[in-house]
Image (cartoon, rainbow, N blue to C red; front, side, top):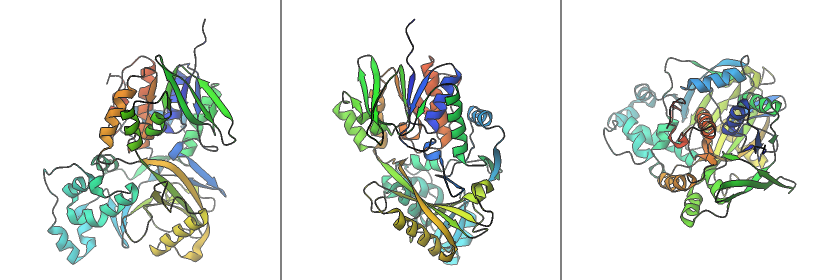
Length: 450
């Protein structure tokens, strides 16, 4: 009997590890390559330092998909807590509820701003070709300009009128308004993904860290093998029967050998990402603010989000008399911010936290920096057209499937990545799902064809 080649999975983030677990449960061998030398979980990893744990990105374990919820509970049945989900927009010292309530916000803005806002009612039935229009139609021009425009431009690095309206539809998806808590692993999302990785390893399938895909080789039969290197410049090759990729979509297309057609390669090059820098600050303060996450629309600082890890889970903090914060900065690879030293970035984070009135410089016990390249796909006005070109050509490969946030170039949440991985595995098993059709709520019937 001929030996069945393993399924090769490129990337050990939520999509890659979900696919690996689904496959080994069905008796298939898998081989996972992950470029990170230390962690699995991708952007949903949990970084540890001095006994503190830092959630890179902030991840709710909530989904409208029962399949996803069942997956979470089966893998980690005893270590979920109910974490408070208190998110607010921070603008010039004032806090506004998120999801956003225009009536409450109007009172907080004061008399003059209230008048300006009353003259800037949300529009009805206007075009929604970009994020600026999408937000203005719902909240009015004044709220858009004050609270949303600075925030989304920090994250995307583009004016809102050059960002796709899809960003609003995905990022501002409604969650149940009556829920005050959401499930969360007590040691952070990395605890969950490390548990998944351990289960895959226990089934005898390897997960290789520090192994970066450089070339994806193919012929008329499909993808045949991948080659790559590690930090020591050692060379590796892996053959497979099927190939699942959560690599950045453009990166995957440009790694193909022979090269993709010119128009496909051009579409791949046009896809861009934002890098994420998390400045992790440990403060000698028992409490700092009540929220789990502050969305910082204040244009006077560069920080976009501030996570209060202790409020997500007390177990993320090594000392109950201290508090740890994660200040998130989005940037391009060519930005001065991305290329700054860790020391300078730590000082930037401390300065921003002090300027916002959250801490005093004397409170800081320690600070360090975590860098995540290509953390956020940029959805500009041309991204869907470029995706259409890529999707049509990638669809010709019978044994190659992109999946996940970066694999599908989709500004999504982790449950969306999980569903796309589940569907990709079902396709290997004979189904005909279209992973690109999974919507912002990750609603896709797994027992029906796409």
